[in-house]
Amino acid sequence: MSAPDATKEPTGLSLYTLAAQQSSNQVIAAYSTSFGWATRLLGPQVRQSVKNIYALVRVADEIVDGAAAEAARLGGSVDPAQQLDSLEAEVYAALENGFSTNLVVHAFVLTANETGFGKDLIEPFFWSMRQDLTVQEYDQAGFERYVYGSAEVVGLMCLAAFIHFGGVSYTHEQKLELAHGARALGSAFQKVNFLRDLAADFKLLGRSYFPGVSVASFDEKQKTALVADIQNDIDVALKQVANLPKSSSVAVKAVLMLFAELNLKISRTPANQLVQRRIRVSNGKKLVILAQAYFGVN
Image (tube, rainbow, N blue to C red; front, side):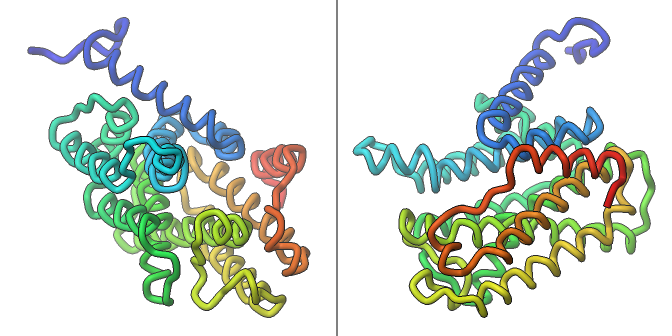
């Protein structure tokens, strides 16, 4: 059977894929205002791929931290571990078949197969998600592995889309440098969220991600060291922004500027207050940052 004519009204698998992508867009719109705004700075083709990636990430996160875990706590017959296993198995099956009855999975594997990433990045992601179901504290090695799987590989997935749709040829060495930046971006994202969510992670979920850091004894020295580590990741990622294709570089710069603003606010917040409230950037400030990235203002 011949493939549908993409120049005509979508039908069959093409229509199903369109519906899957729209489903992923709805997930992003519901869960992440800042991310949704930033994706508007991406080129149209790469924008949809990045949304497809993050929608699956969001669903997995809801299994271990959000809706599924809450349903289990409220007495529902939901087993978050089983749900996560099923989601992972569905992703691998869809990678082979090019189809999933789960619309978010279908959109994700479309992007994975189109841009060229696979189980080498997906397996570490699900490993890290699985740790959230059982692990409360990490040593340094465990923390680094967790951050790699939960965030750095997502940066690498997005990089695959940036390169695929960017229209730029890179040498192997240049791709390695870009990968270094993508991992740093993911690391900064995760560590900023850990730092601003210290109290919630500990009080609601019983977790302490940063090795040796406790809400009860968190002080200015620890905060300063963590802020410096995050800023180092941001600086590493920023060095690669100019080397990205134009269809993605502005959006990546905007995201890094948002992280930098969050990190700055954290640095100016006393440690004893940081464990009491979540630090945010106002919507007005976010719009200013997006405009600065778009117009090339540092």
